[in-house]
Length: 462
Ligand code: 9MR
Image (cartoon, rainbow, N blue to C red):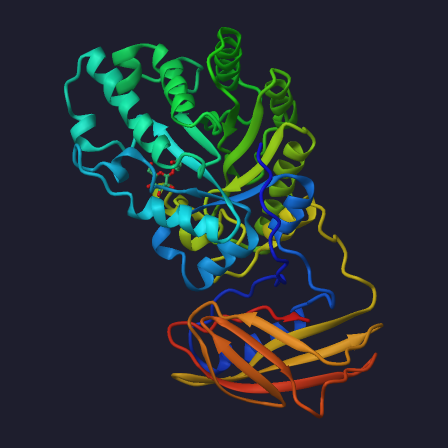
């Protein structure tokens, strides 16, 4: 596994109050809730997930959509993760929708973004039964033609990103649930040998890239994972290039397989790396605090199963925000499967990943905290305040930062100097209120504009 670059530490924010749609009464309620929740922000800035993962030599990745890599989505994707996987951009149907006519725009964009942010890329995916272009899926091919098409595709795509994509999901989802081979274009045309052929072609196109077979429902010990185990054991024995297995880990709330660590270990014992490649944990909507707490425990269990095995490279989440998740479209009524909510506020699952990666589990005893509240709200505007309070700690000059989740803009501030760039607001003390003594507090206020919703952000103190 390649070690990701060490990123610049960023501050975290915590918790979520969801989105608020209009109304004075609701605004007052939110003000109370925000005060009660207290938006705890540790005085010392907490490291982002990627710094914790880097320190352990592990992957913390996310699937991304290229068109969304701006604003808050781009900031979080760049700040928190050390690996990116294009969610759809590198699939055959995306890159060659018409035979011989290529569209690399989104894939290039994601690889460029990753490089600009010191991130590695997981290429996904070269040989799959799904999301193939119609011309390929509906064509009639001899085995020789099929083999040529597959080999040429791999040579072209892997070659294009040679040295820039660290690992490839070369073959995706080759098995049925009972461990038999899935009847696909590739299997039906070429037999099981398509897998060895694909791996060999990928190795030739970029000898430095790590080559994986990736599948779902193979997280615990079961018939399907045993079929995968037998396959990769035999490939290795035959000298076919294979570096690892990807366990997708599209999981259901409360159903992390108890044999996950044991399963990871048995692949590792073959001399293979194991990556958690598409982690999400879905629940029946609406989410509530009990479900989110269970989800956090589930995320932690997955992280711990991986971290307990040195050859487990780490985990990639399949979208980091509930606003960019495949679950609601595929499983109607289910969702909330990722570590951030739809307004980019971290959920308990985020904390769980943070803690599993070695982040602090309990807030320091002495701390300064910041509580954001909306004190009044009307059709297009609102007044808000942040109260900074210290207990067992003190501040001599303070900064309070947050990220708006729904396009809000600060128009005016008092008792602080505030600037806004994109969604990011940075405030610092006025000349007369920089000191927050132990046991004391400072409050500053602001007016802002909003539309659609006005969710409460979490404030980070510095
Ligand atoms: O996240 C992807 C979604 O946007 C696509 O509509 C879907 C089509 O099948 O594929 C999703 O990603 C899949 C991944 O490529 C392979 N494992 C299962 C993922 C979820 O379906």
